[in-house]
Image 1 (cartoon, one colour):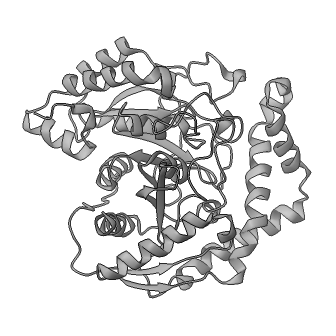
Image 2: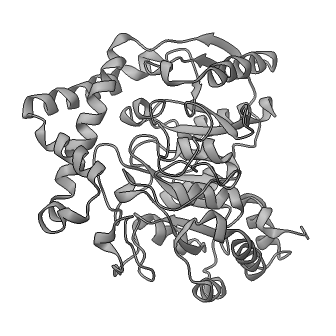
Length: 423
């Protein structure tokens, strides 16, 4: 028996539970011990009830995720825990039903460890969560508690959501795997939607195989076993995206260093720039995101505007100020770039691009810049953060693997190939 069950990946823990060499209660107790030791500093939870967790572990359904602890970002409803969406407006709100991703995880036997901290409506003001690697730095956001909780050992997997960069970036900052699936692969029913055109439910985990197992289970899709080595090496395009200037010097060097290592490992590596059309997403993404968010928060604006942060009110005002013509043009940019992406990546299996501009920024008042993420979110394509060592300040760095929409199984497999090649 592994001396610290909380260290296990989902796939290894599930194997041991199925074999009868690990009891779900033992795994959950190990995670609870870890939470007791580190949560006062990390502050990953918006809601945490150890007694409720123990009861859930004893009642865990039989299934592929039986006994697996999971964190749930507090924009996904839970029938037995409050859902505040990171806002004082909703403090104490108790939904009647689980969001679809939570319901399907529980049906497969997963044990919800608690609700994890999100920024305000998964968009603006951060919560109290710190980076487990260095508490003087942000864990990233908006999936702050989910990324920090996985990195700290509170649970091996957690739900996050992404509208710009809220899964991929915090995964990079905390040194874990992040998986933003193709748009709508994981059902969003029961999520506090902010941007219907962008919001995507994803996962943060210890391994790429964990993401494939959990996402496949809750979506009913066969995402394969990424750890089964493919019979050939990948064709990889090194992409310096239209927002490349946001990457700091160490991150730009990291991309080249990883590309060189992948070539040495046998990959076919070439430069691949996106056509100029894709640069229009720099203007289109914030128009769509903020206009949709402002409409989504109509009740909050009408009844509790004073409890919305000033910074979010500013973005909502920007969204409401967009003309119909401007919004239509932004949607047209989305349609054109989504349609053009397959041809822009023709002859390649995946793109290699940075996951974040650099290491996690100091302080917890800002969760970092999504400049290297929002283009891919707009394109509705699958993305995976692969941990790639540390930066000059000893904080984690990540690299991002991007593929075509609907090719999640292949993207996960190639991300695992990359992870193995870079060690």
